[in-house]
Length: 340
Image 1 (cartoon, rainbow, N blue to C red):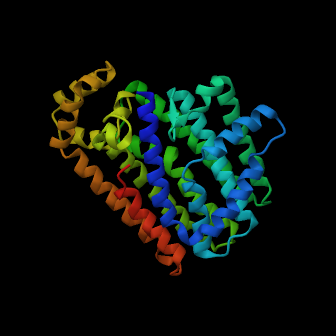
Image 2 (cartoon, one colour):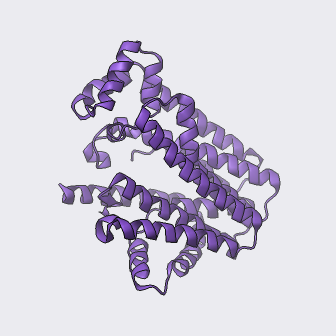
Image 3 (tube, rainbow, N blue to C red):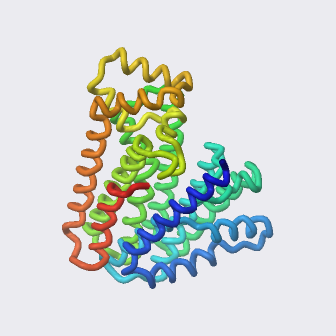
């Protein structure tokens, strides 16, 4: 079963990489420059750290966030050394959070490869995550910009707040729609928004351009997470490498179910919450899927994602027309139409 999961995850990752590679083709040279800086920052004089770092670089992901930073910078200016360093900063920060997430979730695989804690155990994984977080904050100081340093530190705080809030809500199962949007804004949208804002900062964009890109990133991140949550209801092992309602089995109530709850009898809501609390989701997948569909949970969530995507694109209206701006608009459409 593990071999099959690895095969599926690797194919999904490859498909996503290929799609994003096409979207980000206009900034291919910028991505190469970033890659050089990232490898330099990841190097270490401690053998074990270097060993884990090389494993991470070898199995790096789609690099969506640094690419987003680079294309945001190019939409309002000309990328420079600070741009490439800051792109490496956000990738370090993102990688640190993934390592910690995998420990928390006891995940077996990441991008089709064994997770750090499955190879080097929890202690090394946690310390490596801490090390990369520290590295990202130190690297941000290389730019000499207080705005950049403050933005990076702020997003690190928001990421941690979002993670803790999600755990709190999973324990009590009392999440509201307002709670949901607060949580995904911190847990997902904060870093995507910071990437766009940081790109603007590195090329000394105007305050208006900086705010437009920050807002675009916030909306993009929220739409991205809603789509992720929709896929959890629409998935099967042949598409995503995981069964439907994987998040719900972890007691994570997301937007499709929240919307279904809003138009359903209280008795049904209590019944489903009881299933989640008692760990009965796996046995009741078909019942829950039908409940969400019958009460328009999926449709309402899709409409919300579309609305937020449109707001993201509207945020870019003040930017000059350019290939980079076109990439940002294409990304907004991609995040809500992707199949995995």
